[in-house]
Image 1 (tube, helix red, strand yellow):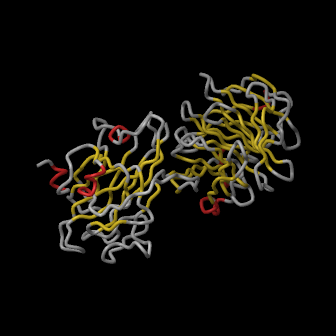
Image 2 (spheres, helix red, strand yellow):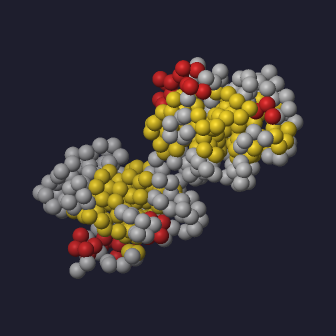
Image 3 (cartoon, rainbow, N blue to C red):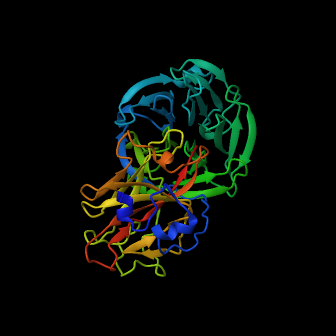
Length: 437
């Protein structure tokens, strides 16, 4: 008898569980509905802060992350408009150059975007306070081209297709503009629907391709449809910058979207870059819903599974790293399971939420077509897949299409103690991952 059959009596030793036998693995499944992912807030937490006060910036104009080479840049928004490369882990100064190579630009840019499609990155700079000057330079400050003007740009970035965008404020409302990156000519204008505020910056998410602007007055990240200008989601980041004044100098994602960098501060001594970690996994199935509780009142912590005999908080399933099919380094980890148990990680194409399904000492929220990813032994209450570089990527084990897709994950584990129901097994919470190509 193989290990998975031993752990899950009556389960099939096949990679994919057919519909007619799925109840053998998950005995209380109802017909799961297909889930669709809608726009939602980013899930962020503070990872670190970088002190950049030694740069003696009079005003932080903007911040940008250079994907090729993983380089981090900030620009002084006051004269003489120096552009600084800083260490992305310490904030220490690495290099600098002046923006005044662009004719007439001598007061300091408020917006910066980096084009990484060429071997030597090209930087677009826009200065709209007291002047309307903009242009294109190399990453060493060599002049390439002058733009017709700054178009009131308060932020800038390149989207995932290589298009240059700015967000601008005319004193009444904010709009997105797509520019020719070589000439600075406006190619399209998209008013932000319902906007009456100035935006601090603009950045595109490398994972989803979505565009975000930062509303200056409330420190809200707004996900904007670049075709219609409608606001698709709102993320409140004020909790991350309240103690550090406000986001004066913009924001940007790193090369994969795993981190968000926020340039904050209102004076030289307080200038700081806040580094936020991004969680791609949407947790569900924690037993806190009053109509679908854990089977015997064994509710754990929010976003974790039902309590087990060794952990009253319940086992927690998390993921690490951005889920890209083309460059997959995503890891599943079950935390808080019994110290030496085994965990079966499985994937589904749908979810049973909100109709959680009672099974053993826990709940099932993963449905549709089920694929068993792998069974892994826990050490110290933690089980991981993949455990090393020799194991198949999660996207390969889960047969994720090259175009990506939405999948749901959960962990089944043995809990042999006489704890809750007569069953001797339990589940972690479930998580949803949206795979990008």
